[in-house]
Image 1 (tube, rainbow, N blue to C red):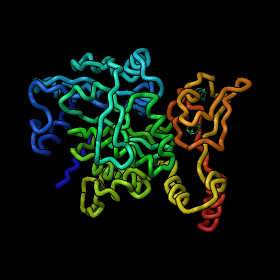
Image 2 (image 1 turned 90 degrees about the vertical axis):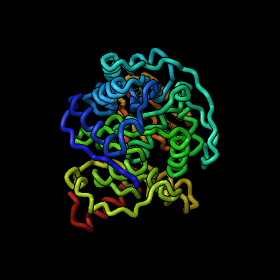
Image 3 (image 1 turned 135 degrees about the vertical axis):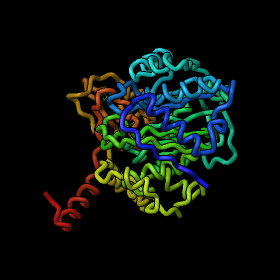
Length: 388
Ligand code: SF4
Ligand code: SF4
Protein backbone atom coordinates (compact mmCIF):
# COMPACT_ATOMS: atom_id res chain seq x y z
CA UNK A 1 0.00 0.00 0.00
CA UNK A 2 1.26 3.48 -0.85
CA UNK A 3 1.56 5.63 2.24
CA UNK A 4 1.92 9.39 2.24
CA UNK A 5 2.40 11.08 5.62
CA UNK A 6 1.31 14.69 5.96
CA UNK A 7 2.49 16.34 9.17
CA UNK A 8 1.50 19.74 10.49
CA UNK A 9 4.66 21.77 11.09
CA UNK A 10 4.05 25.48 11.56
CA UNK A 11 7.64 26.75 11.62
CA UNK A 12 11.19 25.82 10.70
CA UNK A 13 12.03 24.77 14.24
CA UNK A 14 14.58 21.96 13.81
CA UNK A 15 13.28 19.89 16.75
CA UNK A 16 9.69 20.01 15.49
CA UNK A 17 10.83 18.97 12.01
CA UNK A 18 12.84 16.09 13.49
CA UNK A 19 9.77 14.90 15.41
CA UNK A 20 7.68 14.99 12.24
CA UNK A 21 10.28 13.08 10.23
CA UNK A 22 10.89 10.46 12.92
CA UNK A 23 7.14 9.98 13.45
CA UNK A 24 6.64 9.50 9.72
CA UNK A 25 9.50 7.04 9.47
CA UNK A 26 7.91 5.02 12.27
CA UNK A 27 4.56 5.05 10.45
CA UNK A 28 6.35 3.92 7.29
CA UNK A 29 7.79 0.84 8.95
CA UNK A 30 10.65 2.09 11.11
CA UNK A 31 13.77 4.18 10.63
CA UNK A 32 15.93 1.11 9.88
CA UNK A 33 14.13 0.74 6.58
CA UNK A 34 15.80 3.98 5.44
CA UNK A 35 18.92 4.57 7.53
CA UNK A 36 21.34 1.87 8.65
CA UNK A 37 24.57 2.19 10.62
CA UNK A 38 27.63 3.15 8.52
CA UNK A 39 25.58 4.00 5.45
CA UNK A 40 26.55 7.01 3.35
CA UNK A 41 23.34 8.84 2.45
CA UNK A 42 23.02 11.58 -0.16
CA UNK A 43 20.67 14.44 0.68
CA UNK A 44 19.25 16.01 -2.48
CA UNK A 45 17.65 19.40 -1.73
CA UNK A 46 16.25 21.87 -4.25
CA UNK A 47 18.87 24.64 -4.54
CA UNK A 48 17.71 25.97 -7.91
CA UNK A 49 19.71 29.18 -7.51
CA UNK A 50 21.31 31.24 -4.78
CA UNK A 51 18.38 32.59 -2.81
CA UNK A 52 17.99 33.14 0.91
CA UNK A 53 15.76 30.61 2.74
CA UNK A 54 13.08 33.27 3.38
CA UNK A 55 12.39 33.54 -0.36
CA UNK A 56 11.07 29.96 -0.46
CA UNK A 57 12.76 29.12 -3.77
CA UNK A 58 14.99 26.51 -2.12
CA UNK A 59 14.62 23.74 0.46
CA UNK A 60 14.85 25.29 3.91
CA UNK A 61 18.16 24.60 5.73
CA UNK A 62 16.31 23.52 8.90
CA UNK A 63 14.99 20.48 7.02
CA UNK A 64 18.51 19.59 5.89
CA UNK A 65 19.80 20.05 9.44
CA UNK A 66 16.97 17.94 10.92
CA UNK A 67 17.44 14.93 8.63
CA UNK A 68 21.24 15.31 8.91
CA UNK A 69 21.02 15.06 12.70
CA UNK A 70 18.73 12.02 12.45
CA UNK A 71 21.21 10.30 10.12
CA UNK A 72 24.12 11.08 12.45
CA UNK A 73 22.23 9.88 15.54
CA UNK A 74 21.69 6.55 13.76
CA UNK A 75 25.37 6.03 13.08
CA UNK A 76 25.29 6.87 9.38
CA UNK A 77 26.88 9.70 7.38
CA UNK A 78 25.28 12.27 5.11
CA UNK A 79 26.56 14.19 2.11
CA UNK A 80 24.58 16.99 0.48
CA UNK A 81 24.69 16.77 -3.31
CA UNK A 82 23.01 19.17 -5.73
CA UNK A 83 23.59 20.65 -9.16
CA UNK A 84 21.51 23.72 -10.01
CA UNK A 85 21.10 24.96 -13.58
CA UNK A 86 23.92 26.87 -15.29
CA UNK A 87 27.62 25.97 -15.16
CA UNK A 88 28.50 23.35 -12.51
CA UNK A 89 31.54 24.88 -10.84
CA UNK A 90 33.04 24.92 -7.36
CA UNK A 91 32.66 28.69 -6.93
CA UNK A 92 28.99 28.62 -7.96
CA UNK A 93 28.29 25.74 -5.61
CA UNK A 94 30.04 27.53 -2.73
CA UNK A 95 27.99 30.70 -3.37
CA UNK A 96 24.83 28.67 -3.60
CA UNK A 97 25.52 26.68 -0.41
CA UNK A 98 26.35 29.88 1.52
CA UNK A 99 23.33 31.90 0.38
CA UNK A 100 20.76 29.12 0.76
CA UNK A 101 21.90 28.44 4.34
CA UNK A 102 23.27 24.99 3.51
CA UNK A 103 26.83 25.70 4.68
CA UNK A 104 25.64 26.58 8.17
CA UNK A 105 23.03 23.80 8.41
CA UNK A 106 25.51 21.16 7.23
CA UNK A 107 28.15 22.36 9.66
CA UNK A 108 25.68 22.05 12.56
CA UNK A 109 24.55 18.54 11.56
CA UNK A 110 27.92 17.17 10.44
CA UNK A 111 26.88 16.82 6.80
CA UNK A 112 29.54 16.87 4.11
CA UNK A 113 29.00 19.35 1.26
CA UNK A 114 29.72 17.89 -2.15
CA UNK A 115 32.28 19.70 -4.33
CA UNK A 116 33.09 16.73 -6.56
CA UNK A 117 32.22 17.96 -10.06
CA UNK A 118 32.90 14.67 -11.83
CA UNK A 119 30.11 13.26 -13.95
CA UNK A 120 29.25 9.76 -15.08
CA UNK A 121 26.71 8.03 -17.30
CA UNK A 122 24.15 5.54 -16.01
CA UNK A 123 21.87 3.24 -18.00
CA UNK A 124 18.20 2.55 -17.46
CA UNK A 125 16.43 0.21 -19.85
CA UNK A 126 13.00 1.06 -18.41
CA UNK A 127 13.35 4.65 -19.61
CA UNK A 128 11.17 5.93 -22.43
CA UNK A 129 13.61 8.55 -23.83
CA UNK A 130 16.63 8.74 -21.57
CA UNK A 131 18.10 5.25 -21.46
CA UNK A 132 21.54 6.78 -20.79
CA UNK A 133 21.65 9.66 -18.35
CA UNK A 134 24.65 11.76 -17.38
CA UNK A 135 24.57 12.44 -13.66
CA UNK A 136 26.77 13.93 -10.94
CA UNK A 137 29.14 11.06 -10.09
CA UNK A 138 28.87 11.63 -6.33
CA UNK A 139 25.36 10.11 -6.47
CA UNK A 140 26.94 6.82 -7.56
CA UNK A 141 29.14 6.69 -4.47
CA UNK A 142 26.34 6.66 -1.88
CA UNK A 143 24.27 3.83 -0.40
CA UNK A 144 20.95 5.70 -0.61
CA UNK A 145 19.41 9.02 -1.55
CA UNK A 146 16.94 11.02 0.54
CA UNK A 147 15.12 13.52 -1.65
CA UNK A 148 14.38 16.93 -0.07
CA UNK A 149 12.23 18.87 -2.56
CA UNK A 150 10.36 22.15 -2.10
CA UNK A 151 6.69 22.60 -3.05
CA UNK A 152 6.58 25.29 -5.75
CA UNK A 153 4.76 26.30 -8.88
CA UNK A 154 6.73 25.91 -12.10
CA UNK A 155 6.36 27.95 -15.29
CA UNK A 156 6.82 24.97 -17.57
CA UNK A 157 5.85 21.91 -15.49
CA UNK A 158 3.13 23.79 -13.51
CA UNK A 159 4.18 22.17 -10.21
CA UNK A 160 7.58 21.06 -8.92
CA UNK A 161 7.99 18.65 -6.03
CA UNK A 162 9.54 15.25 -5.43
CA UNK A 163 9.83 13.75 -8.94
CA UNK A 164 11.01 16.96 -10.62
CA UNK A 165 13.61 17.58 -7.91
CA UNK A 166 15.61 14.56 -9.04
CA UNK A 167 16.26 16.34 -12.37
CA UNK A 168 18.99 18.03 -10.29
CA UNK A 169 21.12 14.87 -10.39
CA UNK A 170 21.90 15.90 -13.99
CA UNK A 171 24.93 18.21 -13.92
CA UNK A 172 24.40 21.96 -14.53
CA UNK A 173 24.33 22.90 -18.17
CA UNK A 174 23.61 19.32 -19.37
CA UNK A 175 20.05 19.91 -18.15
CA UNK A 176 19.61 22.26 -21.09
CA UNK A 177 20.21 19.36 -23.50
CA UNK A 178 17.22 17.52 -22.04
CA UNK A 179 15.02 20.55 -22.65
CA UNK A 180 16.25 20.76 -26.20
CA UNK A 181 15.85 17.05 -26.96
CA UNK A 182 12.29 16.98 -25.61
CA UNK A 183 10.74 20.38 -26.33
CA UNK A 184 7.12 19.22 -25.91
CA UNK A 185 6.06 19.46 -22.28
CA UNK A 186 4.78 15.90 -22.12
CA UNK A 187 8.00 14.54 -23.62
CA UNK A 188 10.04 16.62 -21.21
CA UNK A 189 7.88 15.32 -18.35
CA UNK A 190 8.65 11.79 -19.53
CA UNK A 191 12.37 12.50 -19.61
CA UNK A 192 12.14 13.74 -16.00
CA UNK A 193 10.35 10.53 -15.06
CA UNK A 194 13.13 8.59 -16.85
CA UNK A 195 15.77 10.39 -14.80
CA UNK A 196 13.81 9.84 -11.60
CA UNK A 197 13.44 6.10 -12.10
CA UNK A 198 17.16 5.85 -12.94
CA UNK A 199 18.09 6.94 -9.42
CA UNK A 200 15.15 6.47 -7.09
CA UNK A 201 15.44 7.95 -3.59
CA UNK A 202 14.59 5.72 -0.63
CA UNK A 203 12.58 8.51 0.98
CA UNK A 204 11.10 11.85 -0.08
CA UNK A 205 10.52 14.72 2.38
CA UNK A 206 8.69 17.64 0.76
CA UNK A 207 9.16 21.06 2.31
CA UNK A 208 5.67 22.57 2.16
CA UNK A 209 5.98 24.52 5.39
CA UNK A 210 6.48 27.63 3.27
CA UNK A 211 5.77 26.95 -0.40
CA UNK A 212 6.09 29.14 -3.48
CA UNK A 213 2.98 30.15 -5.42
CA UNK A 214 2.50 32.26 -8.54
CA UNK A 215 5.53 32.93 -10.70
CA UNK A 216 7.58 29.91 -9.56
CA UNK A 217 9.96 28.21 -9.36
CA UNK A 218 12.13 31.20 -8.44
CA UNK A 219 10.16 34.44 -8.78
CA UNK A 220 6.90 33.57 -7.04
CA UNK A 221 5.48 34.51 -3.65
CA UNK A 222 5.84 32.73 -0.34
CA UNK A 223 2.74 30.81 0.77
CA UNK A 224 2.55 29.18 4.18
CA UNK A 225 1.07 25.67 4.04
CA UNK A 226 2.46 24.40 7.36
CA UNK A 227 3.00 20.90 5.97
CA UNK A 228 5.80 18.40 5.74
CA UNK A 229 4.86 15.61 3.32
CA UNK A 230 6.81 12.37 3.54
CA UNK A 231 6.65 9.18 1.49
CA UNK A 232 8.72 6.44 -0.06
CA UNK A 233 6.77 7.01 -3.25
CA UNK A 234 7.50 10.33 -4.95
CA UNK A 235 4.61 10.06 -7.44
CA UNK A 236 2.01 9.58 -4.71
CA UNK A 237 3.61 12.28 -2.61
CA UNK A 238 3.34 14.74 -5.51
CA UNK A 239 -0.23 13.68 -6.16
CA UNK A 240 -1.26 14.51 -2.59
CA UNK A 241 0.77 17.74 -2.57
CA UNK A 242 -1.20 18.83 -5.65
CA UNK A 243 -4.45 17.88 -3.92
CA UNK A 244 -3.46 20.18 -1.07
CA UNK A 245 -2.97 23.16 -3.40
CA UNK A 246 -6.17 22.21 -5.29
CA UNK A 247 -4.32 21.46 -8.51
CA UNK A 248 -5.56 18.52 -10.58
CA UNK A 249 -2.88 15.93 -11.35
CA UNK A 250 -4.15 16.09 -14.92
CA UNK A 251 -2.87 19.68 -15.18
CA UNK A 252 0.66 18.57 -14.19
CA UNK A 253 2.55 16.98 -17.12
CA UNK A 254 4.73 14.75 -14.91
CA UNK A 255 1.75 13.31 -13.03
CA UNK A 256 -0.30 12.97 -16.21
CA UNK A 257 2.49 10.96 -17.80
CA UNK A 258 3.07 8.99 -14.57
CA UNK A 259 -0.54 7.81 -14.75
CA UNK A 260 -0.08 6.75 -18.39
CA UNK A 261 3.08 4.85 -17.53
CA UNK A 262 1.55 3.08 -14.53
CA UNK A 263 3.61 4.80 -11.84
CA UNK A 264 0.54 6.45 -10.34
CA UNK A 265 -3.02 5.30 -9.92
CA UNK A 266 -5.59 8.01 -9.36
CA UNK A 267 -8.08 5.47 -8.08
CA UNK A 268 -7.75 6.94 -4.58
CA UNK A 269 -10.52 8.19 -2.37
CA UNK A 270 -8.91 11.50 -1.56
CA UNK A 271 -11.99 12.96 0.11
CA UNK A 272 -11.82 10.16 2.66
CA UNK A 273 -8.41 11.35 3.77
CA UNK A 274 -9.38 13.76 6.52
CA UNK A 275 -5.76 14.78 7.00
CA UNK A 276 -5.71 16.38 3.54
CA UNK A 277 -8.80 18.47 4.19
CA UNK A 278 -7.19 20.33 7.05
CA UNK A 279 -4.23 21.30 4.84
CA UNK A 280 -6.15 22.25 1.70
CA UNK A 281 -5.35 25.69 0.30
CA UNK A 282 -8.10 26.91 -2.03
CA UNK A 283 -6.44 30.12 -3.16
CA UNK A 284 -2.97 28.85 -4.10
CA UNK A 285 -1.89 30.77 -7.21
CA UNK A 286 -1.12 28.42 -10.10
CA UNK A 287 0.60 30.35 -12.91
CA UNK A 288 0.17 28.33 -16.05
CA UNK A 289 -2.86 26.13 -15.82
CA UNK A 290 -3.41 26.60 -19.51
CA UNK A 291 0.08 25.31 -20.41
CA UNK A 292 -0.57 21.57 -20.47
CA UNK A 293 -3.76 21.98 -22.44
CA UNK A 294 -1.91 24.14 -24.94
CA UNK A 295 0.68 21.45 -25.38
CA UNK A 296 -1.88 18.67 -25.76
CA UNK A 297 -3.55 20.77 -28.37
CA UNK A 298 -0.26 21.29 -30.16
CA UNK A 299 0.00 17.56 -30.76
CA UNK A 300 -2.95 17.75 -33.16
CA UNK A 301 -2.64 21.04 -34.95
CA UNK A 302 -0.70 21.28 -38.22
CA UNK A 303 0.23 24.92 -37.88
CA UNK A 304 3.43 25.60 -35.98
CA UNK A 305 2.95 29.34 -36.25
CA UNK A 306 -0.46 29.11 -34.65
CA UNK A 307 0.93 26.95 -31.84
CA UNK A 308 3.53 29.62 -31.08
CA UNK A 309 0.72 32.11 -30.54
CA UNK A 310 -0.75 29.73 -27.99
CA UNK A 311 2.34 29.12 -25.93
CA UNK A 312 3.22 31.50 -23.10
CA UNK A 313 6.46 33.33 -23.90
CA UNK A 314 9.31 34.76 -21.83
CA UNK A 315 9.28 38.56 -21.60
CA UNK A 316 12.29 40.50 -20.32
CA UNK A 317 11.97 43.44 -17.95
CA UNK A 318 14.83 45.66 -19.10
CA UNK A 319 14.58 47.86 -16.02
CA UNK A 320 15.29 44.91 -13.72
CA UNK A 321 17.80 43.18 -16.00
CA UNK A 322 21.45 43.71 -15.00
CA UNK A 323 22.79 42.01 -18.16
CA UNK A 324 24.54 39.30 -16.15
CA UNK A 325 24.19 36.90 -19.11
CA UNK A 326 22.96 33.98 -16.96
CA UNK A 327 19.92 33.44 -19.20
CA UNK A 328 22.02 33.72 -22.36
CA UNK A 329 24.43 31.00 -21.27
CA UNK A 330 21.64 28.74 -19.98
CA UNK A 331 19.26 28.93 -22.93
CA UNK A 332 19.19 25.45 -24.55
CA UNK A 333 17.99 26.85 -27.89
CA UNK A 334 20.65 29.59 -27.95
CA UNK A 335 18.04 32.17 -28.90
CA UNK A 336 19.12 34.81 -26.40
CA UNK A 337 21.80 37.44 -26.90
CA UNK A 338 22.72 40.87 -25.61
CA UNK A 339 22.23 43.55 -28.24
CA UNK A 340 22.46 47.28 -27.62
CA UNK A 341 22.61 46.64 -23.88
CA UNK A 342 19.35 44.72 -23.88
CA UNK A 343 18.41 41.05 -23.91
CA UNK A 344 17.28 40.08 -27.39
CA UNK A 345 15.23 36.94 -28.10
CA UNK A 346 14.63 35.07 -31.37
CA UNK A 347 11.15 34.02 -30.33
CA UNK A 348 10.50 31.73 -33.31
CA UNK A 349 13.09 29.21 -32.11
CA UNK A 350 12.33 29.51 -28.38
CA UNK A 351 11.15 26.11 -27.08
CA UNK A 352 9.42 27.64 -24.02
CA UNK A 353 11.45 25.72 -21.47
CA UNK A 354 11.56 28.83 -19.21
CA UNK A 355 15.10 28.13 -17.99
CA UNK A 356 15.72 31.87 -18.48
CA UNK A 357 12.98 32.67 -15.97
CA UNK A 358 14.13 29.95 -13.58
CA UNK A 359 17.74 31.08 -13.48
CA UNK A 360 17.42 34.87 -13.60
CA UNK A 361 18.79 36.23 -10.32
CA UNK A 362 16.91 39.54 -10.71
CA UNK A 363 13.38 38.20 -11.40
CA UNK A 364 13.58 40.08 -14.68
CA UNK A 365 11.87 37.37 -16.76
CA UNK A 366 8.11 36.98 -16.72
CA UNK A 367 6.10 34.34 -18.55
CA UNK A 368 3.35 36.00 -20.53
CA UNK A 369 0.38 34.13 -21.99
CA UNK A 370 0.15 33.89 -25.76
CA UNK A 371 -2.38 36.31 -27.24
CA UNK A 372 -4.81 33.63 -28.36
CA UNK A 373 -5.11 31.99 -24.93
CA UNK A 374 -5.21 35.39 -23.29
CA UNK A 375 -8.12 36.48 -25.52
CA UNK A 376 -9.99 33.19 -25.00
CA UNK A 377 -9.65 33.49 -21.22
CA UNK A 378 -10.83 37.10 -21.32
CA UNK A 379 -13.89 36.12 -23.37
CA UNK A 380 -14.53 33.20 -21.00
CA UNK A 381 -14.46 35.61 -18.06
CA UNK A 382 -16.93 37.94 -19.75
CA UNK A 383 -19.33 35.05 -20.32
CA UNK A 384 -18.94 33.98 -16.72
CA UNK A 385 -19.66 37.58 -15.69
CA UNK A 386 -16.31 37.87 -13.99
CA UNK A 387 -14.64 40.46 -16.24
CA UNK A 388 -13.17 43.38 -14.39
S1 SF4 B 1 17.30 38.69 -17.79
FE1 SF4 B 1 18.07 38.06 -15.81
S2 SF4 B 1 19.50 36.39 -16.25
FE2 SF4 B 1 19.14 37.46 -18.18
S3 SF4 B 1 20.80 38.94 -18.31
FE3 SF4 B 1 19.06 39.98 -17.37
S4 SF4 B 1 19.38 39.77 -15.17
FE4 SF4 B 1 20.72 38.26 -16.16
S1 SF4 C 1 14.51 31.94 -24.32
FE1 SF4 C 1 14.04 31.08 -22.32
S2 SF4 C 1 12.21 29.86 -22.68
FE2 SF4 C 1 13.10 30.26 -24.69
S3 SF4 C 1 14.40 28.48 -25.09
FE3 SF4 C 1 15.68 30.06 -24.14
S4 SF4 C 1 15.68 29.60 -21.96
FE4 SF4 C 1 13.97 28.46 -22.89
